[in-house]
Length: 270
Image (cartoon, rainbow, N blue to C red; front, top):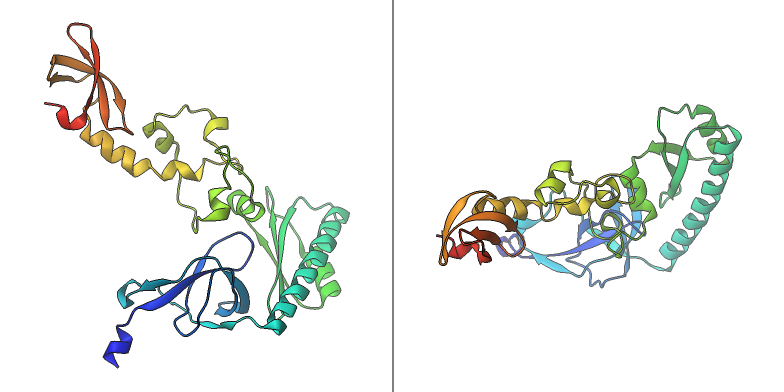
């Protein structure tokens, strides 16, 4: 019994929409591969999702909190239900979008999600201010005869749902692999010596790019190990003053008293 409790568990990542957060599930009892469809229990009831990662073996002490087991691999009936729900979502999106226009509501419909058991339809939207959508909810309930929820999301979540290509030429981080939105500040751009041009440091969502946070800690740690600009140091070629830092290569440019400029690694600084 002790051996079973302490055994490694097979963990897979499951995504419920084409884009969005990846959730970890225990697949120890089922043989699964990437792209397989599975049925799982979530806080919103039964859901169908896709395996988007390979199987990872994790020891007991590294398992995520509240880890749920995969119920089963999706069968033909499950896949039929998924296709039906997709059609409901398409119809619901078109209907809701038309009603928003008819009622002249200041909101933008982003996505629609129908639960596996069809007991609830969730409409995701963005808006610049508070919106009175009570009459819209009545329209939706009357049309679809089920529980209706309208959820206002912010621009980062909108971009994740819609997807796209970033200025780097690759798929947006938020819609491809990021699970959470970490705080991003203008200080991160300054520490990385980036031009503070909004067009250069803003993502598709109009907010600071998530990737500014990826190397921020490394820049901060490296700068601590390098002498600051203006500091006088001793080099193998004589005394000089630091005029520039090369963070990525962990080097500094030094102007010698002779007027010669050299670049030296941090480890050679005396």
